[in-house]
Length: 171
Ligand SMILES: Nc1nc2c(ncn2[C@@H]2O[C@H](COP(=O)(O)OP(=O)(O)OP(=O)(O)O)[C@@H](O)[C@H]2O)c(=O)[nH]1
Ligand SMILES: [Zn+2]
Image (cartoon, rainbow, N blue to C red; front, side):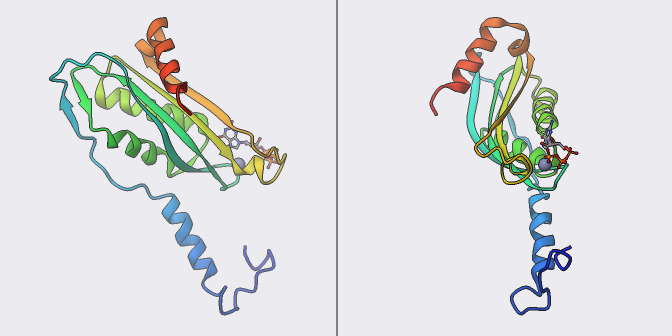
């Protein structure tokens, strides 16, 4: 591919470029392993917990180009609470594969719903897709926003409003 694009892959600096490029893509497509550590909700915490601005990098399955942005993940605890770092690890787990943003957003919500059995889950993702900002339509600066809501965050107006207020506050 690089030769056909005009790169001299025999050059001293570029002879390992095909190999480096393959390794770079492998790295982007290889999430780190993790265990979803949970603890009993001993305090009976019944408020929303929201983690904002989790940076992620994914690859668009149409062009193999990155889309990057920030995720906000929240849940309403049931009998167990999750270790805080694990929310960002779940985002990484599903980001580091060929994706579309809609599927990525749903997969994170479904995973937390199934593994935490919480009162509700909410995921909001905003991203820049390089395939539409750097090439193609070249809509520089465009952000795509997706959301997936489960349980009370979907069904209960007050909880949903609180989630979006907290998710939107700050930056
Ligand atoms: N729904 C959705 N579409 C995406 C995502 N990432 C990229 N796309 C779109 O996938 C579409 C692929 O369209 P095609 O017409 O087959 O490809 P293309 O000729 O390269 O299209 P252009 O990008 O418009 O030049 C484009 O409109 C992309 O913007 C995503 O996460 N979700
Ligand atoms: Zn694309």
